[in-house]
Length: 164
Image (cartoon, rainbow, N blue to C red):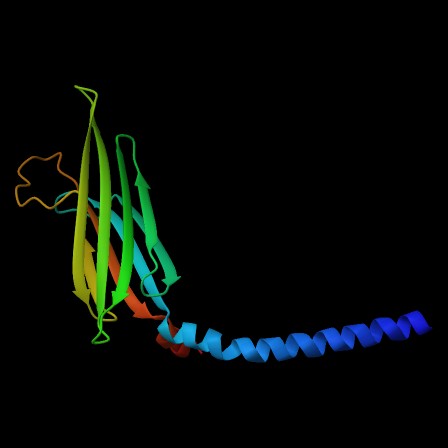
């Protein structure tokens, strides 16, 4: 009987202490949620004048200054992209996109490496397009495909409010 009473008292003290600790963490968590942003990323492979032949969608929640990585792997292509949103002193956002592309060419069996780095000022809710292989206006060759990455940056707090 005494052992059971001791266990119940211990559990009650533990719950009380845990509640007090949670109350101290709540303001800090709320401050993080106020700053949190969500990156909605859509990657597409587009042949000329047709519907996408491949799509990938991903949503990631992050904080300004913390990166989100995307990796696309194909038979002879690998693309690694790191998106990092930063908040500037005016409260606006800058999205830094860093891409690395490895492209293997079949006849020569050589691999080309291309690195890109773009810094793009954006607003919440705005969609941007990123072309890790560049974009060519010359699509006269029927074998031409475009890889397009669309990124939309949203306020996590606003998304949470709208889902309630």
